[in-house]
Image 1 (cartoon, helix red, strand yellow):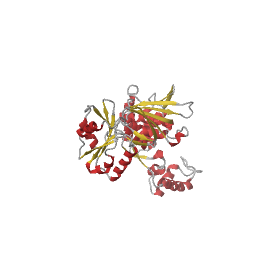
Image 2: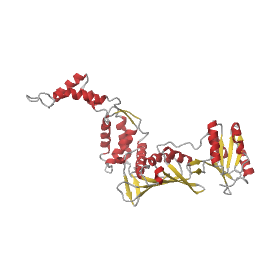
Image 3: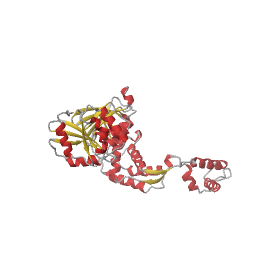
Image 4: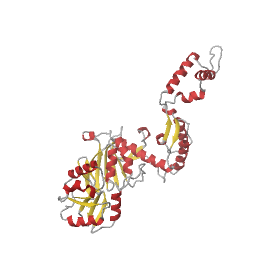
Length: 411
């Protein structure tokens, strides 16, 4: 991610507007991005400082390119680069030897005379001879432990200039979130993924159901319950790429920028055009779920429509998202959880989850080899077990719905 010094954001009418390069207004940056990529692709053996200087020259004639944008591009290109670094302190040892050898020759001058007899080029050759190295090698390694003088070893790069510009847009939006004190997301799909990415970013959550299709998530950290804090802004920035890979969401972040009176708002949604660097996740956790969903199809069966992970059950920070929700034309909603061939630890965890959320109507489709573990749940007011061998039958589910819909209350 970018640093604050590389962030480009403007504040207008209470809104935070991160810098974004658009094809309609920044078409010239396609060619510039191609040139920047070539700098790094052909830059093996050059120092980080030399590469950054070359990138600056590529952008120097662009009238709307502030220095922070240049620095941001250098940072993003460095993210895909591997540099040779001084891991064993050899540069520091070399400096000690060079300075110790050069001390008796002080002062060095460009032209020797009767008073100052040590000409600097001759002194360099003398030092190199004593150390058994060439002077160009000494110059190259003398400060190799300084980050600016790390040399490029490999550049994995970006697939295209467009990908580099897309990464820039996301990175600037992430940098704007560093000042966030509160993050709220409304979502209609991919609930499990959103919560998974929030957990990876070390964010806490509270959940509210707005309507049958929409949930509202508030994300923050432990100390936010006591005071408004920007300490979780970086975590919220880490959460953004994962959220961008999800569907059907809207985000509002409350920011408190330093040296800025009042607070501002950052608004974003899944149709804004930001391209996530995170690959879109699979909609199903197993082939069993995928095959059953494909067999059911998009059309209703006996008035029931199948929706993937469409409901969230939560108690404090404990969340359970059943595999499917069956929605009847009457409005009744029944949850369906599939339990295949799993380890004893998984079965124990699943039983604990079902116990915690025992008040909810859930159909359990259980592999015959593990049915005995769930036999004590069969016949309860909110549990109906559907055994299966290798594939879950659509008919078995619809029959169970018909037989038990009277005693399975609507969600």
